[in-house]
Length: 328
Image (cartoon, rainbow, N blue to C red; front, side, top):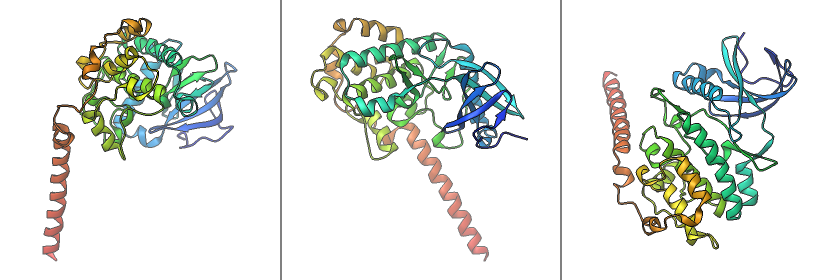
């Protein structure tokens, strides 16, 4: 018998006993569980039945299994193993006791430059470890980072990861697109797979949010937010928040460049500049603000293609309806 959609407290499968239902993600249920063999509490991630039947969602889950077996770093949640019970795969990870960075931002931002830099420096070190192993997170956001009591940020949720040699997966609907609009790099919005510079863009947004308590780009809905990423003026941080140095503003501005080639090339460059902030090149501030000179959002090839497909589909539906009406 397959694992039920939602396990109950005290339910047992394999050598795990469920203690708490922690969260339900886009494709998985996440539980706190007790490992009867090790005597330790762990986190169990189980894909829901619908996602197991979706090749794209199942591919994501398999990538996450691969990633968790590969990475070992203080800033990354450790994978402890995986298994299959009654034909349902599951992932076992360490249990991290900590506060979500989203909660931390809500309660504490704007935080001091020193504290923000320290957190971002540790996250960048973890991402450098990922990138050195050919792994791109692609969904970096405060919800996917926990901060432990001793101030160590830990990156979670590698469900949208891009790995070396992984093939492109076609998703059934737009909600399956890689990334979260508030933190998506322009290349992701345009339908590209992205690379390590995609994570750099998201890291820059998180740093901006830590220092100001708000996002650099906002809108009434997801489409408006994505349009801002592609077309909106890039805010100059030292003008947005009193007390921010031009060097830190230049660092963030370089992370948020729309053209990936104008960002930092990798996390190692990020770390060097964070460790030597006074040496950051300020010239980028001259081009850090102002609207993009690129084509308007609605004229982008990806948007045109999607719009055209929707128009054709609607035309076919209307034509079929008219033909059916004529028959009667």
